[in-house]
Amino acid sequence: MTTYRGPRCRSCDGPCWQYKGDVWGYTCTACIDRHLDAAAARADARDLKARQRLLSKRANNSVFSAVSKVSVGAVT
Ligand SMILES: [Zn+2]
Image (tube, rainbow, N blue to C red; front, side, top):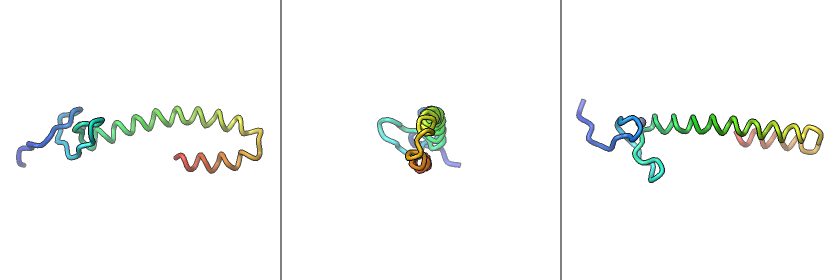
């Protein structure tokens, strides 16, 4: 293997293949995926609570029950 001389990931110091701009800096794909997974997990938990709240509100409303099914599918 040749010595890697490119930019290094800020998180794991591994070889960085993608530059994601000022927000990400130099970050390897693995770290980005990890970050996105964590963010998605947090969003899911928050989303689930909001969804359950909405669904319980809409449970008494037959007009919105059909709409909520469609919107839940669209979000995920
Ligand atoms: Zn990394």
